[in-house]
Image (cartoon, rainbow, N blue to C red; front, side, top):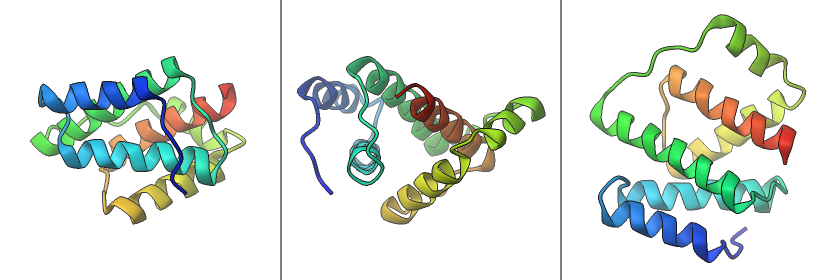
Length: 124
């Protein structure tokens, strides 16, 4: 399943880890998710998409590590995500990612992760 990530993406992950905005486990988990997206689901991210997604995941992991809750998204936004044509795929992506990495996301973080994945699928 492993493919070669863009060196810019690796550099961003290394930089975030070096300044301790991202833990080594978070770095590995993001690489797993990027591998999963491309290898298993055929979703290739542009450098700018990957950078935005990495920034989102870095903040997600930081909040989880610190026990800082993120509020649930408004019902209409959550409904839009559920009505997205690829929501079954997005649900499976999250399940696969959690199974592989052992991560468990609070429902609010999972909603935001699904929102990002949905947008990547619709614009990718």
